[in-house]
Structures are given as C-alpha cells and as structure tokens.
Length: 183
Ligand SMILES: NC(=O)c1ccc[n+]([C@@H]2O[C@H](COP(=O)([O-])OP(=O)(O)OC[C@H]3O[C@@H](n4cnc5c(N)ncnc54)[C@H](OP(=O)(O)O)[C@@H]3O)[C@@H](O)[C@H]2O)c1
Ligand SMILES: *[C@@H]1O[C@H](CO)[C@@H](O)[C@H](O)[C@H]1NC(C)=O
Image (cartoon, rainbow, N blue to C red):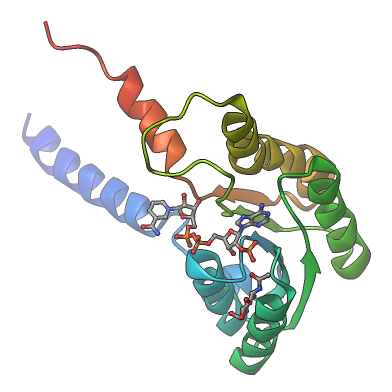
C-alpha cells in the first residue's frame, strides 16, 4: 500500500505532464508546413493565418473577396510566412471547393494541415422562413464543402500524415441536441 501511495501520485503527475505537453502547438510543429486556411479573408481565419505566418508556414488562403485576400497575403509575408498565396473560391459551389485543393496541390505540392473555418450561406439568425433554398445554401457552404475539401485533400493528407482542424459552431449545436433529456 505504501508503494501505491508513492507510485500513484508520481504516475498521475507524469500523465498530467504528458497530457499538458502532448500535441500542444509549437513553432517547430508549424515551420515549413503547408497550411490551407479556408475563410481566411477576415475574422478568425485571417487571424489564424497570421499565427501560422509568424510560425513560418507555407500558406494557402481562400475566400470570395480577392481584395481582402491580397491584403492578408501581404500581411502574412510581412509576418514571416515561408510563402503565402491565395485562391478565390465560393464554397456554395462544390466545384470551386475542389479547385481550392487543386490549386494548393499545384502551388504547395500537397498539404500538412487543413484548416476548415469558413462560414456563410443564406441562412440568418432570424426565425426560419420555411424556404429550402436557404437550407441548401447553408448546408453546402457550412457542411458539404467541408466534406468536399476533406475528401479531395485526403490522399495528400495521408501522404504527409497531416492534420485537419475544423472550426465551427453548428457542430456545437449538434452536441447540445444529443444531450440526454432530464428524467
Ligand atoms: N465569431 C464568433 O463569435 C464565432 C463563434 C463560434 C464559432 N465561430 C466559427 O468560427 C469560424 C469563423 O468565424 P468568423 O467569426 O471568423 O466568421 P467571419 O468573420 O464571418 O468570416 C467568415 C469567412 O468565411 C468566408 N466565406 C463566407 N462565405 C463564403 C463562401 N460562400 N465561400 C467561401 N468563403 C466564404 C468569408 O470570406 P468572404 O466573404 O471573402 O468569402 C470569411 O473569410 C466559423 O466556422 C464560425 O462558425 C465563430
Ligand atoms: C471586399 O473587401 C473590400 C475591403 O474590405 C471591400 O471594400 C469590398 O466591398 C469587398 N468586396 C465584396 C465583393 O464584398
């Protein structure tokens, strides 16, 4: 029992340290890596691009607004990105989503990290008006294009043993719906 009293806390401390340091983000993990960030013309995607830039990644940015993308590319280069380019895309069109992956392949030769972050579509925060068009638009931009980009990039991500990051809030809603009902 005495042994357990010593071994258990040590084991817990080691595991806690391991959990704390395991897979934490570091500059070395990102430097020279090929990173695609969707929805990177503004907002959280833009800020993530800057984080990857100062850590020295090769960046591919995408969104609809070309003027903004050009500006973000310039900022990324100033911050120290190994390289930065963009491809204009509209994720409400799955062919356009596929093209983002094709462009990334052409420019960077593959992927190490895929960051799916864009959000859009015709659905608003107001009460649902009962039209299918807005549902289809929202599902295409916020869900199917995520699946499309992932499927198109998968073999390259497997090749590089890369990672996928998904930024969302709709999946958070899904989790809430799955929560057990109080008895
Ligand atoms: N902000 C928050 O408080 C919050 C909270 C929870 C979760 N999130 C999640 O964080 C992520 C980023 O949110 P954010 O607040 O940074 O959003 P945001 O500022 O509205 O940025 C959205 C990005 O998506 C792009 N985009 C919109 N429609 C597009 C389309 N049809 N095709 C291609 N790109 C499109 C926009 O660029 P263009 O207009 O140039 O296309 C922009 O770069 C989202 O997944 C969101 O659900 C945000
Ligand atoms: C793109 O962004 C610029 C700069 O923020 C803005 O002036 C312009 O209206 C935007 N273009 C479109 C088509 O939204």
